[in-house]
Length: 104
Ligand SMILES: [Zn+2]
Image (cartoon, rainbow, N blue to C red; front, side):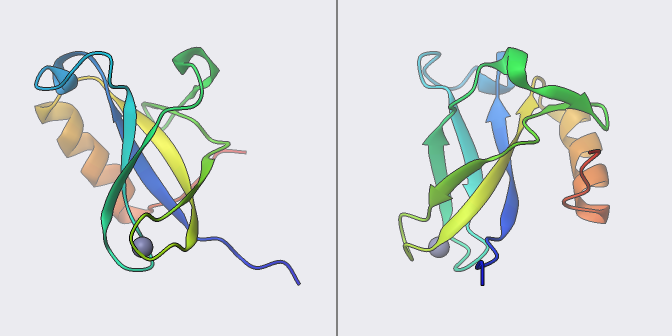
């Protein structure tokens, strides 16, 4: 039996949304579905490999990661965030309603 690995949406900030951080630091932020700890990982794929879905650039393949806190596996599906305010609202509207709908 294959163990099901939970998926979470990760946020990859760029442009205006990343002004407060080191531009060299291109990370995906996520919240662990097991223990609720906040984590981040270096973004693995180039943004050109992301797909435009639901109005956002997303990496639908996701990236496997282990929570640094509880050590359990999860899959992060990164979403690129360009701007903070309007986009954050849109982001929350879409992903709070159906958190992991993938157009496949
Ligand atoms: Zn955890």
